[in-house]
View (cartoon, rainbow, N blue to C red):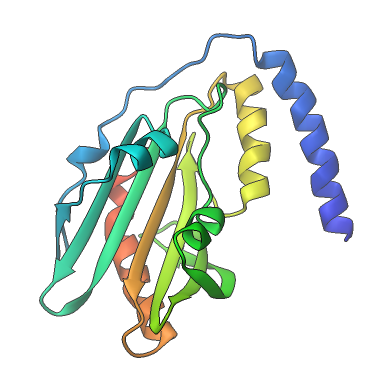
Length: 207
């Protein structure tokens, strides 16, 4: 309860700072397009999947990839990465906590873990979701402005602070999903291996 109260107080302070800097022109850094993310990641080969126009409009992302990565000796991984150059004018990142249930997937377990991505440890959200008899494991995190954040509230707090300090509100969402074919731990291990292979390519695309 104390931690939540401190976080709420911090958000109020950040909101005041954000309001002071909100009128300043934004700085959008140069970056590589998400489409240039390699289709070959270790044992996986990716191919792009189209999204319906109404889904693209609802997401409101300035750049995104939606891919399925397949491997002969590895479970498939569905990857979505969305980038927003600005989150001031109403286009904001949609949390998978809201989007997945809207698509009929219900969370069975929810938690948070860390992943070693080659000398750097990042926090990620991890879920088991279910629709009918199908179960999937999910990793997702927020990335941008040289930072990786798992918490939705923490991401919003940093967004407001960076808007004032850096005049930047750019950022992105990274979400990876794989089927639970044996155990949840095995599925999470797959996502850990995949995330470790993917992460080095994200820093220049979600700067």
